[in-house]
Length: 332
Image (tube, rainbow, N blue to C red):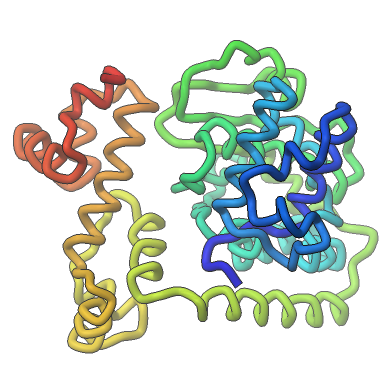
């Protein structure tokens, strides 16, 4: 099983959506491992390289700039496979969100989320998204799918949400309003989706505690299978991306991953890597995202990735990426 992958149901829905518009399956699958096998070669999951190529092909074939929104609106409870079935057996939406936050890596292993309840709202913050696809596509897909799933669970087809995304308004911004409502905000520092906290206590008609326990056992098994595939370096990268802005020292990371510092260092050496290399990779990712998708001052970005001195940050960033912060921000 690929270490970073997408559920096959999402791929099949994308294929169906593109074919409905009159485009051939062969052209959509071109350049992927499915080009020779067809959809009969799809297993339970599709690797991210294939998914990225399928998305790029779909953009080219359909000319639909809002592809992420339109695909997300098709991802309903059945598209989420066993996790979607587990959602339906929950007591209320609060239990659904608890389950989602435990097992969302089944839907997107490269996705990292945080949540809080503040000012009467349940807020889901996106820490990082898969890197293979355009950032706007990743947010559109995730947030539209979240909205559509909650509409189905709550039987509220007109449900709207507040969303914030860390990029400028696209030319099709009106489509965001059509999907989410008027509470849409671009150029945010972090991506967030939120809704009224009172919705968490909405009872679900298909609640079944015994069946929910069985589904959760299966979710736990599937997640363990995914995580067993990960190298120590990949586990480290996932954790560092999730802990954006904190960047613990090596002994803390080793402890969080259930290794002694000595064993952790040895395992990384066997993989040809060091903790500092991984830390610098993640800090470069975070800094690049801030530079490309926000208007934050350089000093603020430097602070967010662990530097008190902007000049030290500039030198470090040049060393990490081979480009200066000015070049990246200016698109040069």
